[in-house]
Image 1 (cartoon, helix red, strand yellow):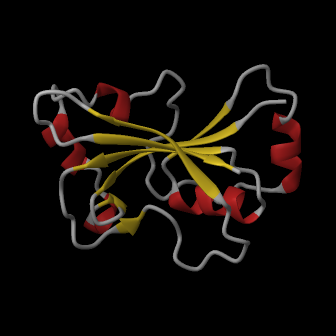
Image 2 (cartoon, rainbow, N blue to C red):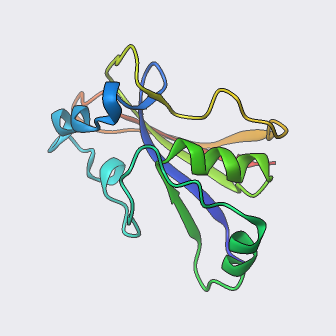
Length: 139
C-alpha cells in the first residue's frame, strides 16, 4: 500500500503562494541549496490552488500504486486528504521569507480531525541559505 506524502515549500509565515497565487517568490532561492524544495522527482502540478478532485474513489484507486503518492502544493487538495485521514507524512521546506498574505499552506477551514504528527527529521541547507526541511510523520 502506498504512502500519501505531502511535499511543499512554504514561507516562514505559512504561505505556499503570494497574493494572486504567485509562486515567483521561490525564484529568489534558485541555486541556494533549495533544488529539493522546488523539484521533487515526482512533481507534476505546481498550481498552488490545487484541484478539488479528492474523492474516496480516487484515493481508493491510488491504493494499488507501486510507489508513494505525492501531494504537491495545492492547499485545497492537501486539506481534503488531511480531512479524510489519508496523509502519512508532511515534508515542508520552510523558506526564509515573509509573504504577509497569499494562499495558506493548509486550509484554515478544514473539517476533519487534526492529525497527530511527529517530527521525524529536520535539516538545514548549507551556507546560510536559511532553508529548513521538516519531515513530519503521522502517529
